[in-house]
Length: 230
Image 1 (cartoon, helix red, strand yellow):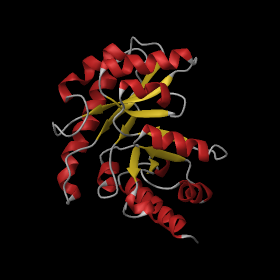
Image 2 (cartoon, helix red, strand yellow):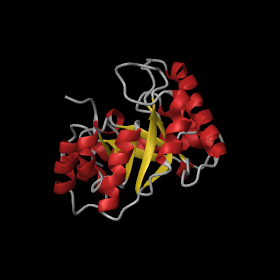
Image 3 (cartoon, one colour):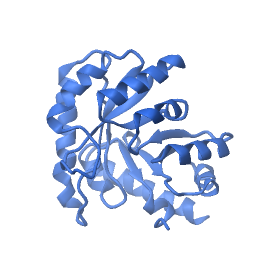
Image 4 (cartoon, one colour):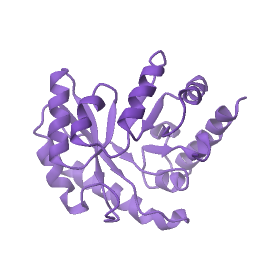
């Protein structure tokens, strides 16, 4: 077994155990393999080992990899900060954009999706730690932004995403994950037409098990699969 395949097996086992420990089905959590700086051949190895969902942070890097791996059955997710002027490149590649945090960006993604006759699935990124270094809408602005975006016919809000402050102890991150889950419940309670907030994108290599306990449906894992980045 190649090392990546073994890493995938270990991570998937941990995901399954975490889900089952809190009464959830293992299939309720999807592994998004984060491939920032990971070369296409390693991604191909991961595909051969059974993965089909990969998350990219940068448009140019993603375009190159999507081209090199066009023969593979891959669902690409965009998980980095997206500038409005790059939306035209993102829409043709990504099944889900995790990081929408302004109406300006949403409007441009909608425009590009309309051109292609698509309905682009998105998540609203929330900056729960109110960190200036991170993107994301403020917690108290989420419902208003969702209402605005719901008017755009070529977008579909699927849920919420967050990148909480970094702690080396997963338990310290738990309150942030819990807040995002509660925020999703509030959003669902609004019953905004066209908004189907089933997804919670949260949790990375160091804290994904806690995120799953707090209702994560998409966990973004890179290091545990591909090793430390150079």
